[in-house]
Length: 287
Figure 1 (cartoon, rainbow, N blue to C red):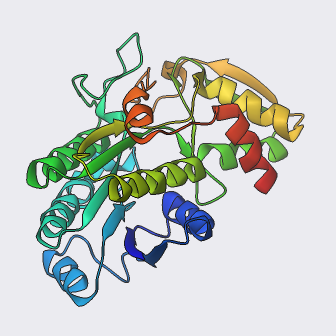
Figure 2 (figure 1 turned 45 degrees about the vertical axis):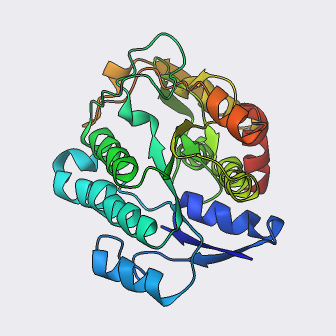
């Protein structure tokens, strides 16, 4: 039995991991959020890891309020950089396999082809900068760390685009949605399953797996087309109109292009990744 610590367990990804935990009977999960484990405290993390046998840590904890981060830089870096450094340092000390979740916001979105793990990162927001700093700290401190970047995360849990659109479409006659930002929605349950399959491979076939990997669902779309798909799958009568990003200004700049090349994670870990609209259909049925 492998014991897996999940930080940020009350967030989208943490709750998605809880949803599929029973499908992985060889794993025992220890779920924590801030009240159970303050990962910004090196002492708290050390005491936690010393007190019990942990084989892996999936770090789902993060400061994810993208726009608020622009005026709350200190807290964003505390959670997305300093806390990650604590986890990476102590994971190495205690021989714990760390899986850290990062984001497409580490890129500036100016590419014209899907981003690979070797492409230069150049974030244009405080959130993206704090996440990139966390990646560098994790791998620089503990080269065995597996960093998984993802994009446009949604699920049945928490606050996210898919749930919010579904709600608004029941309340409003029309919605305006940005059409000039392209990326791939990622169903948190699919990402959770991928993470646990990655850990299975790490333990079944020992090797050097540390580094950065990209994961999203397959395909590419825009926020507008994502919303239209939600409208069609729910049978909503609400009209959806496309607008440009400058018609919907936000404090934090969003990458215009966030499509990932997922060849590395698929080849390394033998993953088959579902198409985004198929996973959206599953999620909306669950809602």
